[in-house]
Image (cartoon, rainbow, N blue to C red):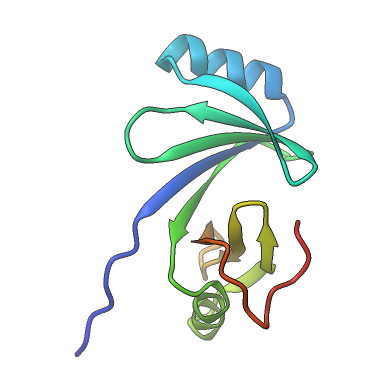
Length: 130
């Protein structure tokens, strides 16, 4: 049996309805400093988490706060289709963002993970920046 190479966790993104409280809490508890950045015409808050894993905070209408891990893959569309074949629900189809491509899949148990491909690489599957 061939094994696939391990894919690194590269980013953790907090989805919350209360951005200010979440940023303050993590800054005071862990020293993770929020910094606002402009990316592709929208605002995003990064969290300086230290180490190799990046972080960010998104204010949205989440019923409750949740962390979304991002795993780096060499081919977002291919990895998304593989996840679908393994029984995942695709909750965000592959799309291009300001710094690369991503999709979000929910495994059979419902837990979501984002598939991430950094780049300026262009492909025929590339959709609008989102």
